[in-house]
Every structure is written in structure tokens, then in C-alpha cells.
Length: 203
Image 1 (tube, rainbow, N blue to C red):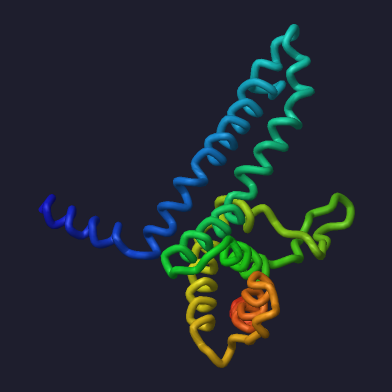
Image 2: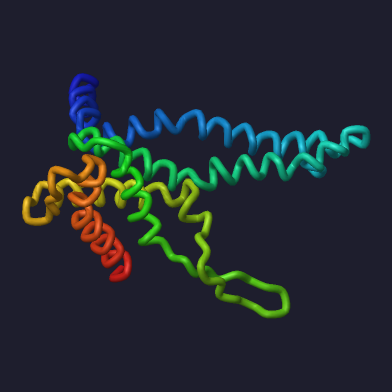
């Protein structure tokens, strides 16, 4: 039974998408640990209710709590965005794409599908809609599953579109290589972002 499980685990572990996710979270591990330490210090050291700051002669520690909250926001509350970028890069390597543009494309595709209007409860006014903002429920750990799907889907679509000769814009030989590469990726990028956004809009 153990041997069978080992074989199943080996097959799953060698799957392209699992490799991309595994490698991405390996790279993300220092960021996650940094965010975990920030959370720990915020609650156990800088908090005046449960932390060391409740001791009178250490009360000055509470003034440092915004610092740990800033670090926590930049790490834990942005985990999904960071993971999407890294998964996009790892998928690009597995699909033999060069550069970091696929990671950027994956991040843009994810931002395109998440809501930019949230409901906020305001005292005396009830629920108020706030536009042009992104909720941390989508950029943090709770948005990881959606982010992984969008990152994988967008790069797979971009790779498939990039192989279609009809979508490659050919530039003269006098044009610098970087510029020519950007133009060749223009139509696949355009179609990918619009397609992912359209799926998000339909849902």
C-alpha cells in the first residue's frame, strides 16, 4: 500500500503544474516566514492587551506595532499576488519561455479578474461601496487558489497563442531584438488578458 502511494505521489510530483507551484512556494518561503515573524511580534510583543507591551515599563513597545503591521501587509496580505507572479515565471520556464514577462502577465491577468469594488460598513451610514480598491481577501492567502488557477491558465493560453504564427507581428531586421520580441508578444498578450478578464466578468 505504501509503495502504491509512493508511486502516486511520484506521478503527482512530476506533473508540470505541481512542479511550478512547488518551486514558487519554495521561493516564497522567506517572505512567508518574514510575515509570520511580523504577526508574532505584532501580537506577542507590541500588543498592549496580550503582548509584552501590557507591562508598564514596556508600554513604549506599542508604538512599534504599526511597523510589524506594515511588514505583515507587504508579505502575508500580498501573498497571492507574489505567488501568481512566481507561478507565472515557473510555468514560463517549463514552457520554454524566456524572461520575467510571463510572471507579469500572470499578475495582470489575476488583477483583471478580482473585484475592485468592496462593501464597507460605515458607522451611521451602513454599507458603503468603495470603488477602485483591491480587498486583501484576494491578495492574501485566501486568494491563493484562484491565483494559482489564473496564473497557470493565463500562461498556458499565452504559450499556445505565442506558437500561432498568424499572431506574431514581424518587425524588420533593423529593429532591436527586445523591441521585436515585445511586438511579437503583443497580440498573444492582448488576447490572453481579454480572455481571462472576460471569463472573470462572465462568472
